[in-house]
Length: 323
Image 1 (cartoon, rainbow, N blue to C red):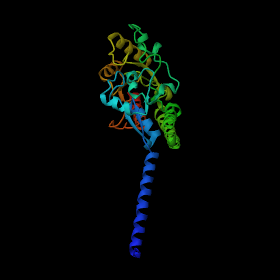
Image 2: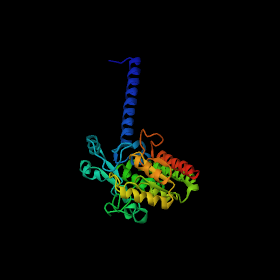
Image 3: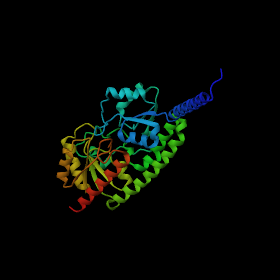
Image 4: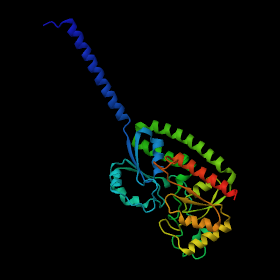
């Protein structure tokens, strides 16, 4: 039976529309496959932001340690195990900082692993005359905070630019070769931003070259070395352990003799002991945060965290100079 011309046109139109829908569906499916997200788990919030900066929309990232918590002796939660079980890449600092992760790595047995401390030269842990553990009344126990190496590498923006971020890009590209071009482009943009950040921090702290400070714990030596400051001692001889009277007395004496201009406290530590040292020495206290993270005002991402800490240090040192 002959199909009327109008019906033939209608069927032709429907076939064309159906073909268009199928093509769009296939295209969307391929686009979705091309942008398949790589699940990444990091120990610390700043590491998570480094992964986001390099990975962009091709990654989803979970930081195990929440903002405001200390990575020293962190107690993992059931949700952490679930996140690790889904991960394709696990990123941590190493060098004795986040050792609690080690027994959990079996949960992420199919994931690639990146220990950032292996990607950059490390400073030895604080010791010698600048460390109260070698001073009067020291037992010699726990002379090192984290072992033989200082793990706080992410607080030096140029180490992040030259070592940490490229290692992250390489690890992501190995898991997701289709995204290699995206990772390299994101890395280049991030490195340019880190160069500008370094210049800004350098300008902020240039008037205070050689200024010495005491820290609530030994986190700021990479930052200080990069920008011409000196961490002249730390209050906690060992993370998670309160300092004893002999340690406190040695630290106060050392701070006076060294002419320190500030005491640095952190969101992850009770500030009262730092405030006590500052009163005894007669210098101000400045609150810094080496982790930042979502919900931490002015420190939601890595760049903002470094910039805010540098600004607080600059303002505190300017105030100390006027005392």
